[in-house]
Length: 157
Image 1 (cartoon, rainbow, N blue to C red):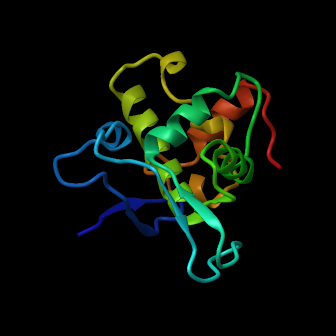
Image 2: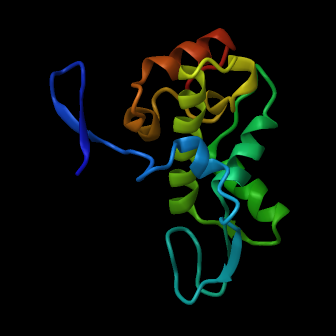
């Protein structure tokens, strides 16, 4: 059963949890997760049949974001393109990329809540725009991303 979170408008919204007995950080660092490059049997999202598609892992997404320098921002589209090139695919799966970006974001915030220095966590706010749909889904609300982006001089697209 989903937990519910109260929003400013007093609406109740379901929140995503990391799973039974696992933390978000566990999900990022799961050694059993391996990337896959598969050939698409049929058209999927923005990718034509016959294309090679990367299904990354949360750790791959985490490592990518950690390489974005302070004061610079990236985008999900650029990340997908870069990772596809790096792993010998033509595309990166948009669905799993979004899910894994969520896991990485929740894990970073989980670490901050445990007292890990901001400089030691994955700077997901460099890729998650404060106006993005993902930011609105994060369990800790939208203000954190907006605040971090402002501190680094990053502006919405």
